[in-house]
Amino acid sequence: MSVAIENFVKAIYKNKINDVKNTKPGNIAKLLGISNAAATDMAKSLASKNLLNYEKYKALKLTKTGEKLALNVIRKHRLWEAFLHKTFEMSLHEIHREAELLEHETSDFLANKISDYLGNPKFDPHGDPIPNANGEITTIDTSISLSNTKEGKNYIISRLMSDDKEFFDFCALNGLKYGNNVLVTKQFSKNKMTQISINNNTILLNEDFTNIIYVNEIN
Image 1 (cartoon, rainbow, N blue to C red):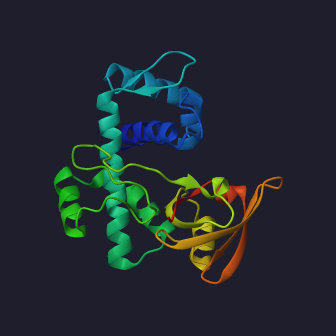
Image 2: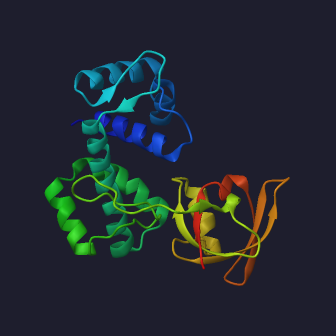
């Protein structure tokens, strides 16, 4: 499959899973930086290949074949992120940037070798689940966003859902890292801000951050 096709089905899958935007061609076009007409043409072409279902003015839906292709690309991306982070200690933004290129040049054989070398990880360094070789995500996501946490509770960071460099730079400076513990000390619901304590530091975060930092409560 071409890079354009792989990126298109991946964008549809991620938009649907993240529940941030719907999967109409216009939204996929914006995400990929292409015109609405180009997105519509691609959708029609992929529908003829049985990779998605296309209806005019409606959200795009991947077929089972299309979803498996998307998950295969995502698997390679997240395995590369895990490899680059472990081997070269690259930042979360750097591993994402490089994995965007490497995912399209990686055979299934090499992806399986990387997975074996890493001990078949279930999650990448951002906390995103890594699909297995059959294109299945076997983990159950019970995490919630920081914006939905309760005051006085301890949580463990389980996912950082972004690809923005400034976001990751901020997280690195403040210890907001996958697997680290945080204490929610105050929820400012009217102003949509959350105050947390981490590594003996107090940080006040607005909803731009708290909506993309996911955690699990520590019982």
